[in-house]
Image (cartoon, one colour):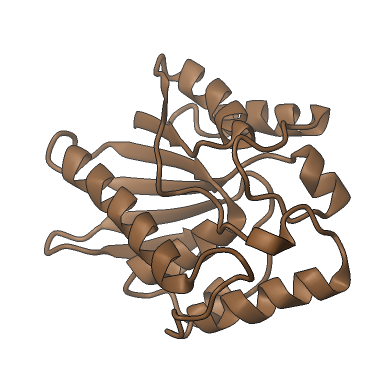
Amino acid sequence: MRLLLIRHAQSTANIRGALSTRVPGPPLTDLGHEQAEALAERLREERVAAVYASQALRAQQTAAPLAETHSLEVQVIDGVQEVFVGDLEDRTDDQAIRTYVDTVGPWLRGELSLCMPGGESGAQVRTRYLDAIGELRAKHVDLDPDGVVVVVSHGGAIRLGAEWLSDNVRPEVADRGLLPNTSIVELEALPAGGWTCLSWADLRL
């Protein structure tokens, strides 16, 4: 089983450079819809068994063309949503961005008690994300071992989640910077449990 963790296409919040984490959140831009269509075409030949998306509108809009290409429905799930930034919501200023980076960075190195101001702790994000992916694995790994499961989610959540899930993603890889819109982190289920990362936004690992 392969798991494709895909960041949503360009949203109106991306244009503003805003920290947008509440759901349903902003929609895709016109360019974002074009990116979603291009993603569906890119993955047309994959053996996609299921398409999931977070509760955010931008994730569901990104997933829709891909699901349609494979005659599937977008399944909306909890747990894979973006890191809730609390008091930093909708801010674009340098101080807010620095606070976000200074909070998330230590999470990648195991300091999970730190919290976003008025938002989530690393421990909370880790628990709900790993639980969500664990449920998907239990549902699909034996049902279709050669299938591809797609989860359209968010850059921050994917960077953290992939590092926590994988046996070969080091913090310096996960902390390389923002994942581009519609970029893919590709994981493969290991027979004994756990995951290994095959590629990170087109970088082979």
